[in-house]
Length: 450
Image 1 (tube, helix red, strand yellow):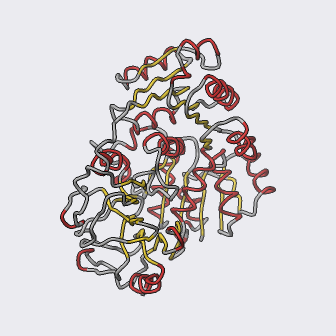
Image 2 (cartoon, rainbow, N blue to C red):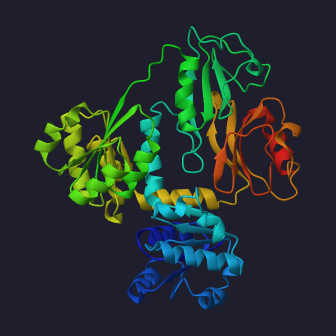
Image 3 (spheres, rainbow, N blue to C red):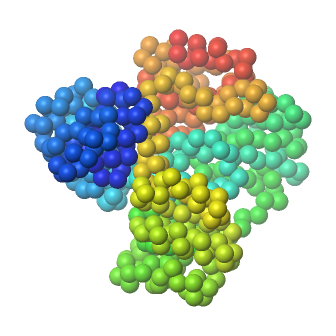
């Protein structure tokens, strides 16, 4: 795949290293001659000293033939202009790194559509998604999430008292944003259809939007209680702001500890429902005064890695149930496992690493990726890229039948994911997440790939 990257900062550097190692044809554009020389020595990539916002230079680099154009500088306007120019010149996919939420807010005006950019992405928001997964759904299954966490997976027991017991799926309403992927019953695995009957104590693996997953739990287990989750965030960073937005449900009681008084006021004005505390969380005395030991989740999200690590260690020793850490610098990459295991830090995320993983998934041109095996190796969860000329091309889902023992649980169109409805259309370039029993796998692939 031919990929052009603009900007050799932490994120651009990491993406260049990751994608070039995987054999992609990577061209990096960077204005700093010093950074160019360093990157040229370290990586098997074409490094060009220049301006990624110059139409002339982009044309010389033949961006019209590139499969992906990634503008990853620290300046939003540079990234928007670069991607818009690249798209106009013929680049297939353009992705701009964006920090300012103004560009992402399409309620009045869509900058993304206006400038013809395929996707806006914020590394800090992707980090926040990783933190939010554990906080929103502690029992989620370790399967890939899709499109910035819009689709997740959770296992639920159908408990005594549920109105779904002894009902066929066709006769119950679990909502349009959920799909029961498979059922575990007395050691056997069942991929259900509309005529499948749910029984008490069935273990259900459910796909859906995070909030819909949480809100549906009481339908499967009436004794489920919605408990308040106490979350403390250190630092008023972009990661923190994104995380607050993802935890907007009233069941989350959020406190933010921030050093800068002016930034505290901005946060308090922006999020009136959040308690903002002006102080330094590296102070053990402050953590004790704020009763951090009673927090369900403590996440250190500042730009200072050393402060983040120190506060996480203190929060863990004070008794915080779950501790999460953001690491910004590449210097700590080799220590991530040590931080998790030795310091009792449950989740450690790095903007560079999560961005590299995110791009790898979304730029992949593999036709079939196995996301997970079903229990007892009875089947698979597959992500299938629909090619031009596929038997499914331009088919409405309700008019397109899959083999028995097969279920479509997610539809990824460009960079948006959803639980598909019967009226959705399958288009070339879409990615389908399909659950299939082992004996139906070949038939499914033939049906979708031709």
